[in-house]
Image (cartoon, rainbow, N blue to C red; front, side, top):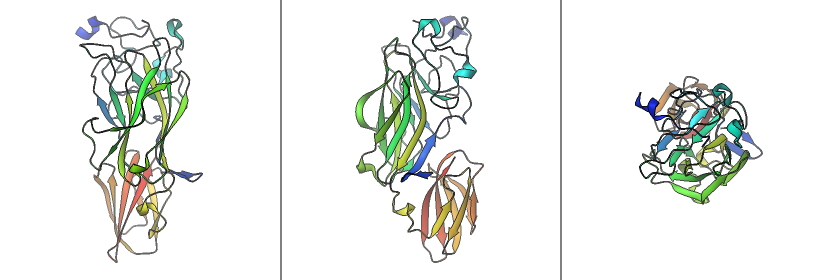
Length: 305
């Protein structure tokens, strides 16, 4: 096989457009090359726990062609240019080119071992509070078709508390989807039963001894935000999304402003202010809670890009 395993000798040593509001998006350009953990605010469940293949290069025995090569993982922030991989290496029908930019998530296939012959890797997005008419879109492809095309499914978890495992996720649509050889946009309609609820969306890579699946340009959109996100509120928050500075304009007097992470952790607390600055926080979705002098409150979902 041209896809390579680690040799045993080494082992011994939010925006709005066209009526859609963006709740979450990521192109993976901001993350460090080749990391396999602490990727933004994603949760990662590696249920197979097996070592992985590489491809596109022929390193010497015991040499890692890039950081975390061959390691057990869910996925890897992959920069093909920095890795020095070659399309069509060893006459494979492979293409490492990103959909956009320089990076994407690479889901490397595991080598069967100990009776485990299939990947079971979960990429879980940060918690999002949906509106109505919700869609989950992303671009996906198989690296090559020499060993078959990659398989995956899309799933959702309905709950305010972060999932500890993948067991409670429900599949959306097909129980097995195929990643084509060319970059293809996938648009998944999130069932209306999840409207206006906090959820976690996931991609489950489930190929059996294939090669590598590539995912890029993830986005979650909604047509109509929930009641707490509408123009009925007393405060306008702008721009939203932003790079971290959000202006507040209100027709009522605010007494305090709090910002919470998607996991419910308080990251910022201010007295009455006209702007909130979270530039020192990671990219992602946050909840802005505003308390007013008359005792009322507003909760807003904001997106730091």
